[in-house]
Each structure stands twice: as C-alpha cells, then as structure tokens.
Amino acid sequence: METPAARWPTREAYDAAMLHWQQTLSDPQLRAGQLARVRDSESIARYGGAGLYVCVYRIDDYLVRCFRANPPKEPPADIAERYAVISAFIAQHAAHVPALVPIDYQASGIRVGEQMYPIVKMPFLRDALPLGRYLAKYHQDQ
Figure 1 (cartoon, rainbow, N blue to C red):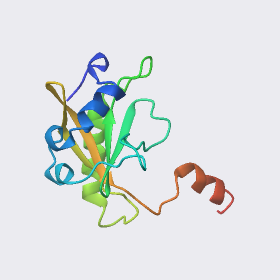
Figure 2: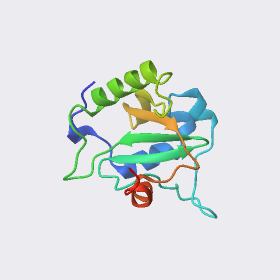
Figure 3: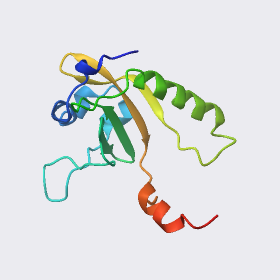
Figure 4: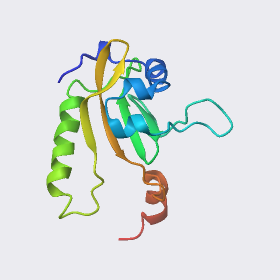
C-alpha cells in the first residue's frame, strides 16, 4: 500500500479520529481499551520523540503509531511497506531473539474522515528507558 504524502492526515485530523477511537480503529482490542489522556485533562497524552511524521497514542498497554503529514516533513513513500516487512520479520524471529518488541502492522488500522490508514500497534513498555536516556547512561559500557 503506497499512500501519497499529500494524502496523509495531519496530527489534528488523527487527534479528532482518536477522540472516537471506539468507532475509528479497526482493532477490537484497541477499540475496547481506554485512550490515555493528560492527567486532570481531556487532552490526549503525547508519546514518542520528535514526531516528524508520526503521531503516537496510548490505549491501555499498547502504543498506536500513525503516519502523518507535517509539511515539509512527510513519511517516506514506502513507509507502509517498510512496516509490513518489519512486522513480518519480528513475527518470524521473535522466538529466537527475545529482545525484539512485537509490532502489529495493520494496513487498514484507523479511519480518518472517509479513508482508512495504516497503524502500527505495539506494546507499551512501561519500565523501559527512552533511547536517549539509555544511550546517555550506557554509552561507555562495551
């Protein structure tokens, strides 16, 4: 599935769709969960790093990664194919490489407006250090 960059939703469009996740997400497990919000607020909690061309949401113990337009930054034209291959690779090798975090690429994961877009569903690693802090802590440990 190749989605032209000009057709990717914006963060605001994804936020609007995620406010109604029970109707817009296709995954039954995600639809049954609760969207994470900022404490004492109705605002959606933000996850992830720079977010150049992704939006990341948390529903229960899962993160949901959506690919977005953020002019002039856009997802690579083959982003959907990349994640489909990564998902298949991890599924094939996870039993032999326990450090691989399972991901579930869903080609028709979320409806934004009238169109379906892919998502990546992955476990929320509650106790894991963010990559930057991990590298700062262990960069000299060979």
